[in-house]
Image (cartoon, rainbow, N blue to C red; front, top):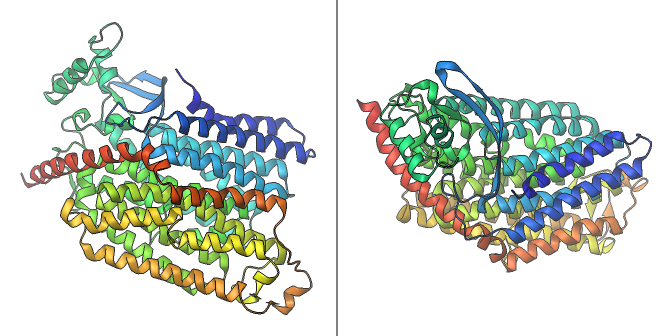
Length: 580
């Protein structure tokens, strides 16, 4: 078994243990150990990316690469069968880009954190724990394991904002914690419901002595699934599971269980499967974040220190979008088809509302925070279309936005370090004093507004293509939604160009009260080290999008075909069951 995925997850944790053993006074060694842990994770991510076979398709229990599956928790529950939780991790075309993104941002974040002086040991300890939990989310294939990593992100982020943040850090940290915790509770409710409804056919075959040489053949698994649907397996012989691939197979659902397609269970005049979809969607939409559950994000960004804003925008928000693609739609494709207009509508609402809010902001960091809300709306729109182009665009948008948003928050941090102020109207003509800095601001702004040649253009183009073709190809979205989404691109150009014109062009001027303490100088070597790689990456993946599309294309195509096929079949079954 290849343990590269475990190495990706636990290399920051090993560095955290080393940091824990170092005396707090040794600030420089602590930073070097944290940097080494982040670099180790990045090296493993690059190796995984290079070794990953983009032609493999994750369909059901097969197709995931570098899989590690070990029995973790298991015991008999009598007549209720057997409880089983596995250490089950793997990677496919949907997660490979996010794994690479996490490795890149992890190193950039450590470099950005080099100026931290307050409780350095505690800061880097929490930072490394956060990197472990995020990588675990992107690799977990067991719902229980995913949930552990998902929940574990809360504590490090809460303390990183609450201790090292700005003047209103406690308020922002508590608001972040409450919003995310509520979303986590929604996810937990559905996770328990799924556990009571789904079996592991391989483990159940072992219980029934159907293994051949210790291996469950495809015929044995099919036999178990047929026996399950015929109700000829006693409850004590069933092995329930948290396996996400097992939950994707309709044949693994126990007849009569709450979330079986033919259960006929209804709550508030909606099938219980639809309620489960909405709860999961709400839980992950908070993390995306989607309007109207987005209000925690601007506060968290404004109060968080720059490196934590980078992590939050670049990778933590992506966990929400990833959860929708990895868990929600494959397990409940019927509800995904039924609520496609709702999901697409929330995506369009996020695009327009986020852009309008950004246009009204005078704080540069808040402007960029609301731009994240707007751009992540494209993820929802692309996913709701359920076209190959749209879903490819959604996945590509998560990777692209991760690179670009990291760059955006870093350039905000540069000006804040010099003037301790981010108000747009307090600066003018910065290009004459900070030409190199202005160049990177221009690159970041133009990449984010979708200028051709940058990665942002590729992702937005694919989402719009998918949205426009959806009425004819999948029938999921009305075309007017995509037309409205295009307005968001115009608004993004407006707020970026207006901010650029007000802050960087014209005669140099700085607000009088800031002049005494502000030191307006160009980029340092450390800042070049952060910004140059991100600028290169957004250009590289904008000019050569096949570098990522070739890795994820086959998986995404299989995903859309599987969700569409199962969605239509199961939707008809669910609706017919509640009419009886």
